[in-house]
Image: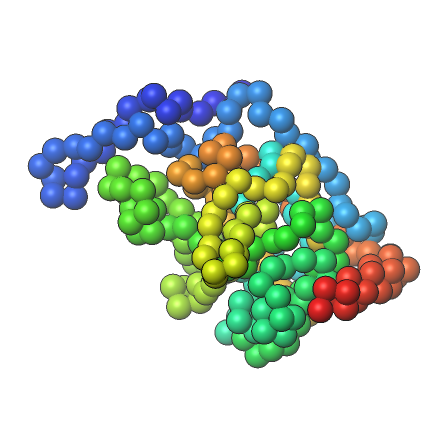
Length: 267
């Protein structure tokens, strides 16, 4: 059974200058607490399953989702941020663009019907089903440097989503210049009336899902966020389940029509 350190467990690490140590009571190690409720769910769209994989807490993942196939991401433990990047599988220099996506839809949130657009303004994927009211694409990805700046030098040894992205990108022949602003499935980043942003308690729960349809062959890269210092994953990193299906034609048509209606109503 997986366990986690408690907040009273002291952890020591060397200082940058090498002259001593700093001690932290921040939990370390991206493992979920014993007894955590877990719901592996199922695909949100009917069809033939072509891929079904579990992403462990702390781990990166990637796969090519073919045109017309639908990827369902299952928040197995609830409020587990799934940081996500998208690339054209044929030309990775064309990749997910936050400004293009938000400008085209005129909305700061990602919801059912949102078209996730590339740096060329072309559709990469479309959100065809979504069990969380709004998904984030503004909050960015955590990393060693940002964690240290936000939470103190005692967390400088904790790697974040940026490090996961870099590791997975290397396995795909990509590098530092290919890491751009990302999606954060299941993370709650409200935009206040004055424009301020916050990372607050999530709105998800064990087994909640989001489904995205590939409009072209897309390389999907995910970091199962190891963050242990803010409420984005309830301080308890849990697994993700990634299910890709080839839908039946009738289901594709129905989902497309529903997504179009939802997008029109939200415009």
